[in-house]
Every structure is written in structure tokens, then in C-alpha cells.
Image 1 (cartoon, rainbow, N blue to C red):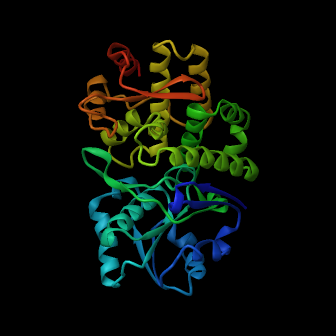
Image 2: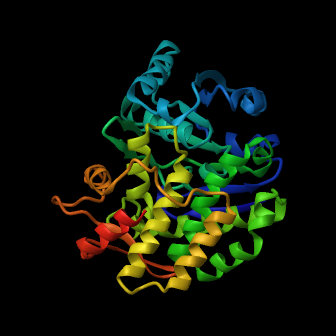
Image 3: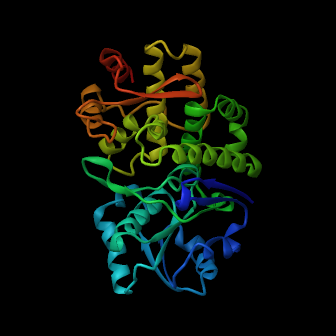
Length: 357
């Protein structure tokens, strides 16, 4: 087992990464300070892992909520089912919520924890690669709105993140590829060497090689933990983690939540960001081709939906959390391994990128 720390002073917390961790109760129980525990999962994950997590927490007063599975259910209506369960079981401020599932479960459970009785504790037990390397770490919680993704939410850090890599054995290939998009992102924004390692090991990752996956998860979490510790509430550097997300969120909103997986949309968005970066003279054509080739080898889409033209992208990108005083800000690449957030891009070049896809 490897343990990383998200260093946030007295709100610091561990990320435990390894095999068979769901058989080690202390990894969860030492972070639970009250009797009441609500496990939130979904109809796909619960049949696989709910029993073992309940056994880990057998000495607590347990309740469960099982949500429908899919991004289309990351809504205020679904969130309300968690509030209702908490109130029906008379959970108090000393309770702890446990998110058992992928990114949707983690985001919505975290937001419930952030807002129930003005804030209660929660723990993350992510079961998808995307959740393990990205959404479970850093305290971003929330739900979608029909007009924009993740527009309703709060920053609320978990007490711990428990990543049992064995859960990836039951993950389907499409979800694995979606998670690899976020892994590739860390190489693009922060670590040239890691990007090169991914080029050398992509086939092993897709074949679910245990050691390769463990390293990819550990390196991704280490990069995210470093960035979150430096900029918890995204006032500066943390925005770099949104590479590809402005375009990707527009794709998800346009197609209907759940049609494209988040990682798939982000992959296409990262390639669009690389294209725009090259048009500004920052990336070479070879850099863009390396990015394209790695995303393709990861089994990810390279082009947005055919019915999304420039005007559709611009309309949806205007509803983005990185818009400041009406001005769009984008995450672009100065080089593979170096990213910037800027509002000083050439609109004509952006138009070319959106028209070329």
C-alpha cells in the first residue's frame, strides 16, 4: 500500500492506494468519529462492493442509499434522495457519509455532505479509474444543471480517500479508457516524463497490468495532491487541471449528460486545446501528433460530435466556471508538460480550431 497526503494543514487527509484495501477496516474506521454512517452507492457498484464495505463498518449505525447509475442522474433531484434518507434516519452533525462508486457518486455524496446541516464528514471509496485519479481527490463536489455541468456545488474535502485497485477488475473497457484521459492530462499539464512513460506503457494499462495501473494512479494522485495543496479553491494554478474541460463540458451538455462519458469528452477537448496551442505557435505539429496518438491508443474519441459547430461550442463554453467578467479563459499548452490558463488567446485562432473539428 502507498499513502499520499493532500497537505491542507489541519484539514489534510490521506490517499491510500493498493490492492485488497477493502479488507482493511481501519483504513476507513479511523477517520469516522461518530456512530452514524451513510453509505451512498449506485445500482452498478452496490452489488459488487457494498457488502464488503458494510462489513468494514459493522460496528457503526449504518444506512445506505442506492442511486441510479449515470451522469444524467447527477441532479438536484437525486441529491434530494440522499437528504431524505439522512433525515428519515435522523442523522445528526456527527455522521459520516461514504461515497462508494465512480465520479458521479463521489461528487453528489460530497455535495450532500457539504450541505447537510451545513456540513458533515465524508470519505471517498472510488471504484472507477477516473474517480481514483481525479474526482475523488481535491474536494470539488456538486451536481449538474441542464444549462451547464457542475455549476451547482461546493468545495468540501473528504476525510480520506481509499483506492482499492482491485475494483478496476470489474470496470468495463470504455470506463477504463475514460479514466485514462485524466491520467494523460497530468502528463500534458505537469510532467513530460510521465507523458513519455504513458507512451511506453499504454498497452499495459489497457490490459490492466496491476503494476502499471498502480503507478499511473499514484503519479496522477501525487500531481493532483500537489496542485490542490497549493491552490485549494482554484484561484490560480488549480485551474490547470481543467485542460480540455471547457470544450469537454460543452460536449457533455450538448449531447445530454451520460451520452459521452466525461473522460471521452475531456479527451476530445484536450486535443482541441493542443490544436489551439499549436495555432498560437506554442506546440509543434509533432507535439499535437504525439497527443493525438496517445489518446487514440487509449481508446478515446478524437473529434467532437458532427452536429456541434463553432456557434454551438461558443454558446455552451460561455457557461463555464472559468468565465471571468464575461471573458472566456482557456487552459492551453506551452509545451507537453507545461500548461497555462489565459484569457489572452486569439479569438480568430479559436474559431479556426472549433471550425476544424
